[in-house]
Image (tube, rainbow over all chains, first blue to last red; front, side):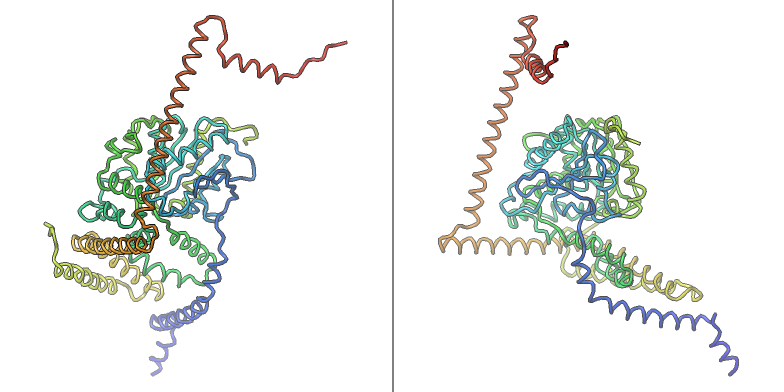
Length: 375
Length: 169
């Protein structure tokens, strides 16, 4: 009996530790559940954006944002961020400490960002050529005139990276530098699930666009969720529940979820072109991709190129991004494979401290002589 | 060798297989721990192992021909339903004297064609102007000694901007 009591009362007894831990975890769960009702209130208090911006150009639903830093821009060549058509671009300037844009603004670049807006059903007939040679060209011209610069540096993320590549190939005289972040170029790989799901034997994109017009935002949302169903539908909510008492974590989580769930529709003809010409036929790397009246030839890209890919990116695998470096004529080209996923490349804490300072340095060396006052 | 058109039975079997494989892996992960480890951390490791096994199984299933075929069939049904609904509503609107989707699309396409023709004409005019400007510059240079029009214009503008010098005395 005495021996039994001594064993039970021994603090190093593993079974006692188990009981203590389980009791602590139970109380913690009760505390977390008590915080659940405040999630709604917290989600309404979220603020978007970290860097002050002015709208300096509009065309239909498109807006061109110009970011202002604490000090005037030092480099003569302006920088234009081109994001994808499938989500809002605020991921690039999500919140303080999670902003790609703020790195470049603080480094002294005259920074702009395109907000493509949300297409209506009337936009279903807009083609990729309309976007590249029309809207993107208009924006580039507006930036060139405002910055009094003959060329601009383009920064393309995801689908925006593909579009930036097409623009740089069609209008090489207007692009000073090209930075690509997880840009889809070579779609021959089946590493990513999207490449498999888009195969013509499984996905009739013509019938889809004819039926729906614009590609619905809900369809894109469901597709992205299904890329990692366990992580998105099981692990993520559990992770949130376990960190409900951590205000900073909850704010980061809700900010990210707000962006992730804010998909926008893709114009039908653009979607058709992307799926058919890129995912299914992979015309870009064959230099047979039609855009408007032209055929894109990647060999016409001669500007300095920085190609960044995420090692753990399931949406745009490395094998889809990196082949561009072998197909351009640029003498100055560099690729970075960063240990991150698709979104983490922009907002991950490691990317904020390691990747973006390096990218700023790369661009600074290729953006002309900075103005007086440079330290 | 994958089946070209998997039957519903094989689709069901493939779906069940991922669950049986997942449970087998769950069992392996559940028993792969040391009882001396700290309880909460150990449970989290077990859970992480379980989720990893589940994610791997799901990834395999999402790449399987069975899933791809069922995805295709689901989408075909959705598209057929959408097409039927759109046509029905368009006919209903037309019957009630309103404009259907086809009419609206027709107007938009007509505007796009107009836009295309206008832009083509503008581009052609721009090319003509550029050609004329080039020929003019070449002509002025060929006349010998006469500054090209652009340089004369710049000189004139510079003279207008420069302040007048006041005479001394």
